[in-house]
Image 1 (cartoon, one colour):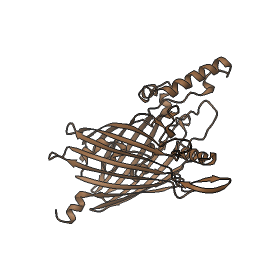
Image 2 (cartoon, rainbow, N blue to C red):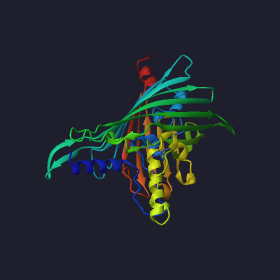
Image 3 (cartoon, helix red, strand yellow):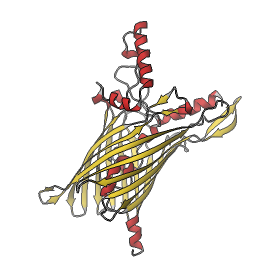
Image 4 (cartoon, helix red, strand yellow):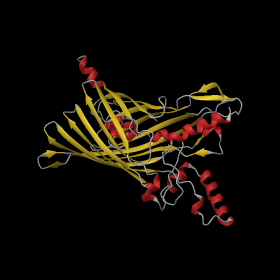
Amino acid sequence: MNIRLKTGIVVAALLVAVQAMAQDHDDFNPINTGVAMLGISSDARGASMGDLGAATDPDVNSQYWNPSKYAFAYSSAGVSISYTPWLRKIVNDIYLANLTGYWKIGSSDNQAVSASLRYFSYGEINQTEGGTAIASIHPFELAADVGYSRKLSEKFSMGVALRYIYSDLGFNTIEDGKTASSAFAADISGYYTTYPVIGRNECQLSLGFNISNIGSKIAYGGDQDNQAFLPANLKIGTAFTFPLADYHNLTIGVDANKLLVPAKPRLQDFGDGSPEYQKEYEDALEAWKNKSSISGIFDSFGSDFAKRINLSVGAEYVYNQQFFLRGGYYYESAYNGDRQYFGLGAGFSLNVLRLDAGYMIATKQNSPLDQTLRFTLSFDMDGIKSLFGR
């Protein structure tokens, strides 16, 4: 494998990471992780609300946002498929595909099992020799998970998910002996919902949290000396739904996200660059590299905690559970990467299927998803049964 091929793979991997352009000043210190595709919103509904979903109404795509919501799902089962183009302005073969499903189990209707498969294609990368293309590879990453959720009371549920992660960036060659990489992770989540009466209207107030991607590090290319943290994340959110009129409902929600990953030490944080400070920096960098993922979670709650919180604010208008309009905004501080963007979307639902579309408009940093349209197609198994009179 020649240098050009390896360079192409590294560039492709970086394009999937947080698109914060390098800036050399103290108020810019984003956190980069391995398998960054785990942090990309998987469906059009949540993405169009500014990447919101910890406490919104349960739907078939809750596996990504908060698996514990499935215990409160209105339908007995469902399945969905989502497609998200990546860098659509530049290429047409890089994308994220996601398949998700769930099934309520037990006669009491208070528990559910769920599963999802997430596949990220880096497109085609040509291997060259002497400036001539001699072969091509198709690097990719995927994550497969299964989950279980259960009501612990009439208002509260919890859920867990176990995840297997596989990354093949094209390093598995005979020449260098390197192989594809894999890792394991788990999610822990909770969901609380109640129905307060305000005036003459029954409203819905929900709270949710999801601690996701708690697991091992991943060693790209089998290099155990250069392991990357998984994007472990804490998501906490709330949503409030109230009726505007008969058949008209409006939901407003807020999510807060915090990566549970320690920031990589920076040289400028260690004095004036003298040999003494250089040694301190090298020691800190070595300690960061050797830090376990669990230790990294605790260390992520440092003095810059407030700067590391990303916010999502969104709304969804629903008419008769058939037509949907959505909008939202995602905010990340300049210190943490400066990603800020609007989400817009719409959808319609029939007895059997629902089609959702989302569109993103970046307002700050360039984003691979800027001006990109994504789709989610969902199937309601209860609707299918009703069609056949069962």
